[in-house]
Length: 383
Ligand code: SF4
Image (tube, rainbow, N blue to C red; front, top):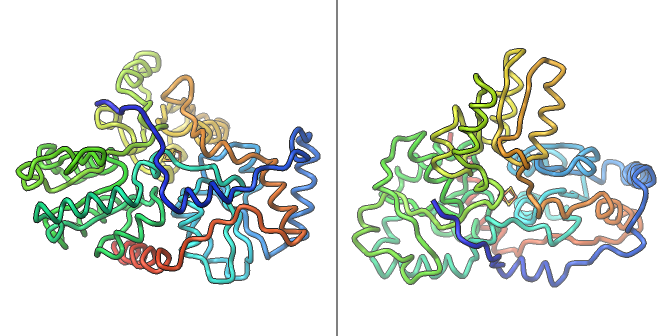
């Protein structure tokens, strides 16, 4: 399965964010770690309950240690609703996560992404204008009225808003099967974006949908590069997108780790390619991976196929219980965009808030908030 060359395509909100991005001032460069830790602690103490810091599982150690809550993007977005008194939500993650938090936030709450250049390669592969063209081409093929759009939560607010307006919904890596089942109750076809791998792996491995009932829609080609007959035969139309971190895992790595560690249990995230899930023992969301490994027997050895910061922290956490955790990729797959958020950025935005300055706020336009909420609420009603 080829992944092609990744060229980021930004939607309008992301372009505006980059234009409005306030870069880290020079005085925040080269600070000693202990000084930064002391100043971050002082700023947090001053801001008190007016501040909540959220840290994604893939965030680097030097930042996540300051988070009030850690989790995957959906779990963290829900933390926003649990803190109505917090005026500032500092999201140490990537752009689409901060947007989701802003969609779910109350009007008086401000969501801050410490570096607005922290994007997501997968979300960037589904810009709103390409989705609008895709939908109009499906209309011309006579397919749009028979199709419900579903987007993975790893997508821009503009995409969530579009699917909300078109009767569709959002899914996470934990509830993707339930959401696909819901989708097929609504219409005969699902347009699933932006991650072809999550869509294919869920439909095939969890739901038994044959591969010949799925097609890949290439937004760079007229009509997705597909004939009317191909779309007619499909139950699942997969957007040609992927995560540049998770496509680095391979079945070859699994064969190697099995050779080196007989009896190893291999668990991967469903954003990895099809043949990797096929070769693994199990797959699931980051929260699922954490729960499975934590419940492992003393003496068990696990090879984990997801972002390396989570894998290393998990390895440290379970080592005292006699459980060994290895990264499936010996070099470690790093989410380089999330890595843009540094403790220096965190310190700068917090000291800004103490001084009454809001740097790098993510503010989703009103129209997108309205329909994005509709899409997210539909997801929450699906069990
Ligand atoms: S790991 Fe992949 S999907 Fe997740 S934020 Fe990084 S680039 Fe995006």
